[in-house]
Length: 320
Image (tube, rainbow, N blue to C red; front, side, top):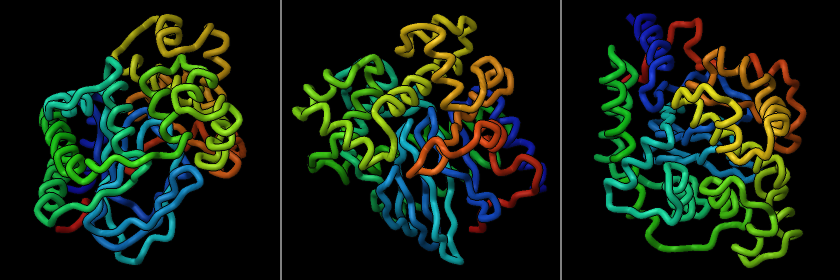
């Protein structure tokens, strides 16, 4: 029965259902990576350390962690009883939920909503859930994991996204300043064509200070992070089945197809056509390498370690 669930989940990845869900597997710990989608971690039991760029914090049962597109992250130091759900949601789904709650976004489009959410979070990774909120989110994640049809999975994912936002936003109403790098990453989500002078001016800091902030907070240069952000925009367009790669690349902020191809290969470890033909854009997972030295992961490793943890193993859902 559990193998059937794993197969069904693989089928869900290949369908346009706006995201995916899977349970934690301590035998498959991902290398440092980032996504074109937004990732939510629903911590069910125990503790672990979540590394976001070069920052880290302890996550524990009853918390929900948010990881925005393009932000490199990895987890470590799992307690023996650690358990969680991993939920990935497409930008369009989160934007739909965001607007349904009456929220506005300064910039248009799905990524404009994610940028507005990121600015509200202001670098905050986790929020505390009530016991009822945690139980309801747990039930929704389990429903998606065991869904037998894409339509059921899609409905569950949207319900999860809506409840996650309703549980999070009241806890972050108090405005607080975020680091320049994290706030700049939000602006880039909304407008990937922005250059360093424009970002520095928008944030009221010098270009040099902004560059150092990227290195200090995210362990990556401004240019590399902007390339990753543009790749996430391209992947969102690819998810919409746009056939013209040049059109999608230009819309994502790249100045030319050759620039796009170089950046995409550096970020993903493969050319865009190979990446799309392999179906990897359904999951939108990209390996970042060592968070302190992002380029250390060889291209072959980046290319081959991008599948979900249930590729070829039986995997039971978390126990109730």
